Amino acid sequence: MIFKVYYQPTKRISPRRENTECLYLEADSEIEARALVEEQTDHNIEFIEQLDGAALEYEQQSVNYQLTEFSK
Image 1: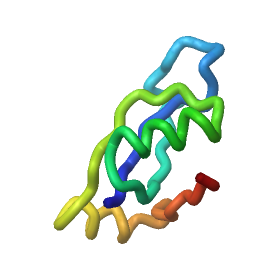
Image 2: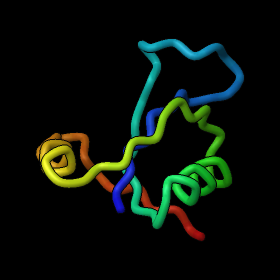
Image 3: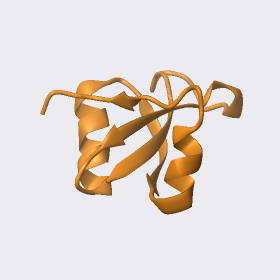
Image 4: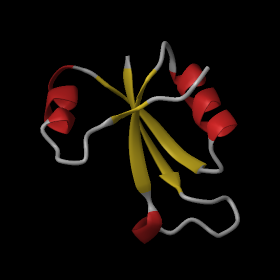
């Protein structure tokens, strides 16, 4: 499954909408996606969205779409 993870670049500052970034990653579940991001980065996760069907096709057309790979 593909997940879109919305995050703040650091946990040290208060979240601001203007600083929200996203990454795309493949994982078996939302729990695994969250664990991978928390273990491999210093990001402050705001929201994780599972993408499939039309939503996934729409995101794949974006210039910013690129799967992030973390070592497990």
